[in-house]
Every structure is written in structure tokens, then in C-alpha cells.
Image: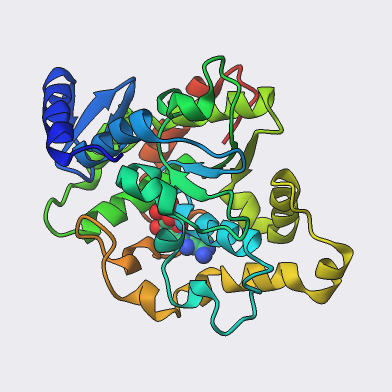
Amino acid sequence: APPLQDVDNQELENLLSSLPKERGIIPSYSYQYQGFWYSPITLQGIINCQKYFQPRENDIFLVTSPKSGTTWLKAILFALVNREAHPPQDPHHPLLSKTPHQLVPFLEFLHPSEYDSLCNSSDSSSRIFATHISLGTLPKAITGDSGSLNCKIVYLCRDIKDTFVSLFHFGNNKKTSPISLEDAFNLYCKGISSAGPIWDQILGYWKESQKNQHKVLFMRYEEMKDEPYLQLRRLANFLGIPFSQEEESSGLVDQIISICSFESMTKVDVNKTGTFVDGFNNSSFFRKGVVGDWKNCLTADMASRLDQITEEKFRGSGLSL
Ligand code: A3P
């Protein structure tokens, strides 16, 4: 049975009062839990899923850092997994009437009673969730006691400078707690950002993807932009639902890419209007959708500081961003 909200609130209060607290970039305050910074709402969701989430064998988890292209990959995953029930050219395709966040919800924003009722995959035994939670904080029911993952994880990352700039603009979309570029930048460099330090979050999944290639697929925003066809095929293969000859020659892959493109998605009414949670507009998840926009926002010094941190953090890991 789902937990009683009151019990959870008391537990959350107790937890929050025991955790390090700092000003956050987007929420007013961030709390450090198991080495990573989260908002109170997210922490509530984390406690809930750590306790109550029961994975199914074919569940798919999309993991990202905020602003690395989550919304885009949610759409891609939904369209890919459900391509038989909902061909991408269907004029009534769910992506034309619902936001990617409605179709593929964040695990940490769901109430436990919604885990089981979620039915967003044509294979009714599996579900697609997204999350920003770090690997070590994912429910043990997913990661397994011995670290042997019970579900497939698709991890998406993006150039750190672009991710930061996207986050800064996103935060300032919400008029209630604006933050200066300089303050946001300093917090980010210290690792104090939603699900940050971003480097540690990425490294956790990167290492797991190296150890466990059948369970974790490591993807990059820039590669999706550069070679979407190849990346989509890679994703389909990883999920065990490869494109057939027939599908490839019918143009299905291009149709999925097209329905999920920035241009198409920003034309859909539901993505232009309405709100997500916490006062954010659905439209704020679509800004420019390009690679390298950091050049219009960061000074050369800021860029090289971020690059330097990235280089130091990733040294020896085989990963470069
Ligand atoms: P920018 O702010 O750089 O434009 P998230 O979904 O993780 O919150 O990430 C949001 C970022 O992804 C934003 O980046 C947004 O514009 C971009 N984005 C959203 N939809 C996209 C799409 N279909 N194709 C490419 N980028 C997209």
C-alpha cells in the first residue's frame, strides 16, 4: 500500500534537518544526500522510491543530469518503444497531445501509488521512467545488492558548459528566485546543483556502463545531434528491439527522429502552453536545442574553469567531455 503522506512528511523533516544545506541554483535550498544535492521535493521522491519501488524485469530507466536533453530522449524512447502501437506518422500520436514528461515521468516526482499504474510501454510488463538520481542512490531494488542491475539504464550526458548554461536560463525562467550568472556558476563549480556534482553523477554511470555494457548505455547529446540515425539504432539494439530491415527501408527511423526533433516538438500545443511542476512552464524545456550555445553566455575564463574541473574529475576514467 502507498505510504501515508503525513508519515512521509515527518520522516522528510527529520532527514532534512540532519543534512548539509546550501542555497540552490533552482530551488531556494539544496540538501546533500548520499553525496549529491537535491531539492526537498526530490528528496521526498527519493525516500519513497528507495522504500516502495518494485522494478519489473523490462523496466527502462533514462538517467540524466538536468538540462542534458532529458525531454528529447524521453520522447525518443517513448516513440521507439511504442512504435508498433503508435507509428510515428500517426496523426493521433501521443507525442502530439501530451508532453514527454507526462508520457515518461520522473521516478522521483511520482507518488508510490503511481508506480504500478504507470503503463507507458506497449509491452505491458515494462515501464519507462526517467530520473536524475545518482547511481548509488537509486533504489536497491533496481541496482541489486551486489550491484548487478535489475533493469536497463540509458544514460544521457551533454557538454558540461552547455548543460550549465541551459540550467541557468531554465532557473531564471521562473521569476520567483532569480540568481546571477556568477552566483549560479560558483555553485555549479562547487557541485551544488540538482543531482550534482554533475561530474560525479556522470562518472558513476560511465563506470557502470564500462563494466556492464548490456545494462547501461552511455549516450551523448552531441552525438544524438550529429548522427541521430546511428544513435537511434544503437539505442534500439541495446533495448533488444532492433529495427527490422523492413522498418529501416520504410523510413521509420527518420520518422521517429523527425517527430522528436526540436522543430516538431516546439510546434506541439501542449509543449507551448501549460505548466510542469513547481511553477515551470512546459515551454521552458525547449530553449534553443543546439550544441555550443555556452559561447553566448560564458566568458573565456568561466569556460576554461569548467573545462579544467571536467578534465581533473575525469582524469584516468577514459571519459572526456
Ligand atoms: P538548451 O537550453 O541548451 O536549449 P532537459 O530536457 O534535460 O531539461 O534539457 C533541456 C535542453 O534540451 C534545452 O537545451 C532544450 O532546448 C533541449 N531540447 C529540448 N528538446 C529538444 C529536442 N527535441 N532536440 C534537441 N534539444 C532539445
